[in-house]
Length: 74
Image (cartoon, rainbow, N blue to C red; front, side):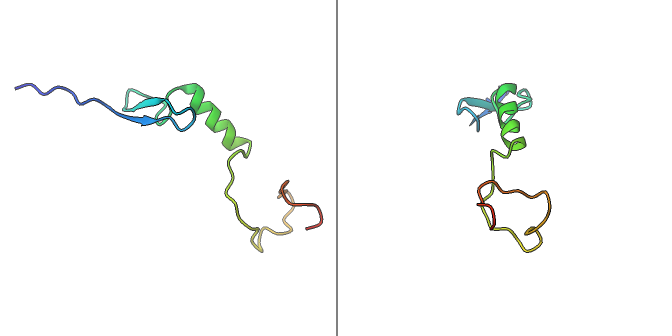
């Protein structure tokens, strides 16, 4: 009795929404392509993704921590 290989699970690409196989044959998983993977990396690198929150006491007044959404003088 031969066992046929299982179909790889399909997941939605987090960048474009296309179906992408979740399998070792897809080196870009969970993305569908290198392009989507690079676009996502660019969003992280350019602070396109942020976690909302307040500054901690340790961060407040730290040189180099600029928050463009905060009005000057605050």
